[in-house]
Image (cartoon, rainbow, N blue to C red; front, side):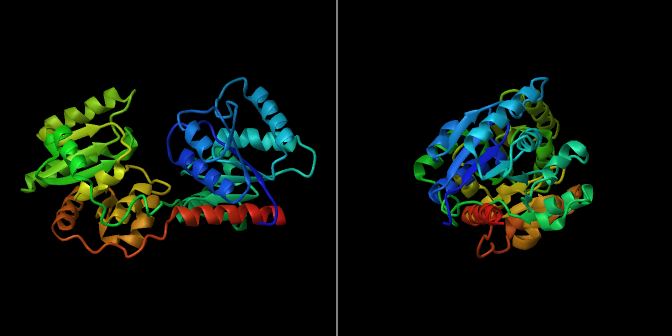
Length: 370
């Protein structure tokens, strides 16, 4: 290591999601390499995990849209002047705007400004701040193409694709749950036993295509398959009306008795292991698709709409699992084929956590050397 860096990451809060997970993963890598890692956010339930990784936290509402945003920017500028970071890394739009303005008010030499485009942000000036980093990390080739299409003035040389990654040790090929776990699973979800289990792991939002999964379940059962469906993660506080809508659809289609809708769980690797088929049916293109590589790493077949980052992943890892978006007939036919004779799993999953961490730290070090 040439010298010890101080890296400040900006994001709205530390509650849940891919942005938060990546923040903690990079914090852990920075600390392990001997650097100083600081996160500025409004805090949240993942704050203990950040601190356990060795990160420092400063509480500022940098993601809160309000008339106080200007005052927040001035407080952020004062914190950055005190910290004297080498890198300021913004992971969301409002924190990026505040960070960009805060840095402009600091005397030279200023910290390097890095952004990560985690999603397919809506076109326009507000989202365009994410393309203003001295280096712009894109979490997939899909995201890179999106940035160049909607902000064509962006210098392509400033865009670096660093795909998200998983720890293969957390999602080992051929993982088997313990007998105790299986017994608890059977007791908790009797409706999911004995048939072929479809798993859609996703939060409770319409974007994730839960209704398409329920329709697929009905199509498979009408074709004589004893399919069952687990919507893992859809039952969340504040999503009661949405869950009720899904239950009504399942009742209408005659599949309510073979459907389970559960809250998020920490034992996702066990859920993958008992699934016969893992679904990713988001009704809009997604930036990446971490559940795809998690499931494939465990060795479970994946069926998904072929679009966005999910389609990009499947094209390289499991192409027979990709279906033209919206084609229910082909979706059901592909599901039956994957259930009866799934193609071989990819030998290796190149999208690893270690690769993502290493590439990000190399980007930081390269920036401060220029």
